[in-house]
Image (tube, rainbow, N blue to C red; front, side):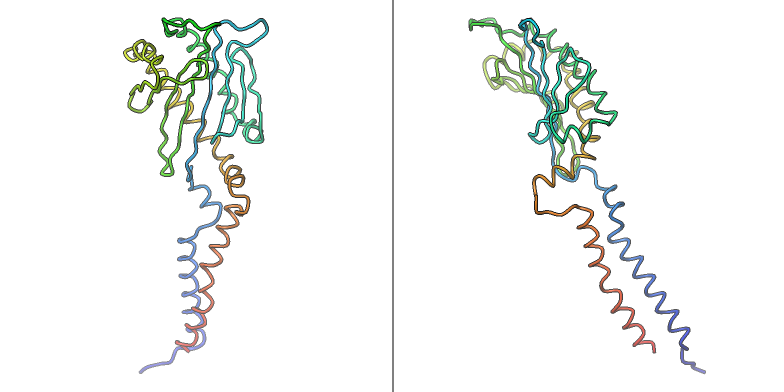
Length: 257
């Protein structure tokens, strides 16, 4: 014998529908915090360190100066003989208390010492300009939108870059005749290539990943002043996706009543 479902059964079914709907919505949207934690370097960013080596600095002047940039924005400066890195922008202040900030000091000093040690072997043989040449080196690690991080170097004298090194494939590219002698000296030197690969694909990569946790929101805000914080947008999306729940529940009451 057929029996009509009572009010309790109808309420139970509606509750089940509501529960399923909530679970489905949570699976689609998730909480803003969960979405934020899952998202790692979702946008392309680059971290760059510019080194200038002075073979014969004036009295009281540093022999090595380093400038750090993220997406072209300067955030630190450092003298290779110093003990502290100086923050030069809000980006630097944002990450100044991180352990990563301190670990940069020793590595940047090591890079400066390494480049200084290489300088006598790579000075162009036909250098006749007045005054000594200064060596420039630029270490860059770049994160693509898919999360892949690449590393590279550029080298030059007196501000003119003449040689590039791809840290991933070990390929050297000459951009100016002055870079030919450097390439000849370094290309077959395993210690040199290993050092450049290690610091660009290891240290620089780790710094980029650590710093970007704090920087990404700041960089996005400065790039798009009218865009609201990501968490607000995530919450709005979640609310919108849940707006169909109430009509669905009401429809269930009507159908099964």
